[in-house]
Amino acid sequence: SPFAEAVNGVGREVRSVVDAAAEIDRLRRENAALASENTRLEERNRSLEALAVENEQLTALLAIRNSLEHETVAARVIARELADVSRMVMIDAGAEDGLEIGDVVVGSGGALVGRVTELGASAARVTLINDPASTVIGQIVSSRATGEVAGDLGGVLVMDKIDATQQVDLGDEVVTAGISLGEAIRSPYPPGLLIGRVIDVVRD
Image (cartoon, rainbow, N blue to C red):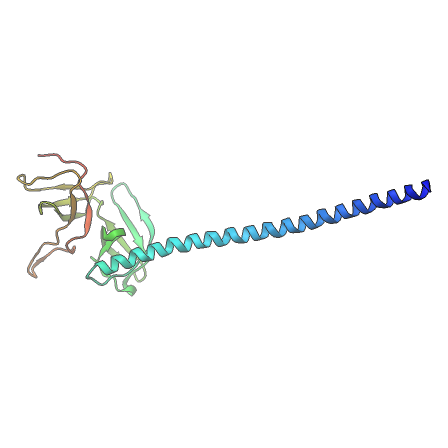
């Protein structure tokens, strides 16, 4: 009887070790499966986030397109040129998409970005409005006063040649004037495109 009990005890311990090993193996397989599922869900979540961003961009583009009376072409910025003397970007649309030299480029909210200055078949170079060579006739919305908005490498725009009798206040919105004097003199920019807001005023 003592010998039988000892043998049974050993048998129970062996079964316990075998069961524990089997349980550990099962838990490892479940853990691997859960890790794989977690990775799949993380990838799907990243994909959904990317789609959400793209959807927001497309919605914004559609809103801009609907707000303009002109034919538009959607394009992405594919390169930036931030040289010491210029401010330009490359976009992934060109002559094959119907673009022409001088076409106006707008961004988020319909704000003025610049103009197409060089053109290829499937890409174009855009000179930004903060390029020193860029000049736009702007109009202060509140007073209808006009002036020249010139680019500056520092990032801000400078609007000058405003009639000294006009009141200019901080926060005033500035848009493209789009001045046209018949067919002979016509602004290259359509009227009403947002240029920016006044952040400083100096009376000369």
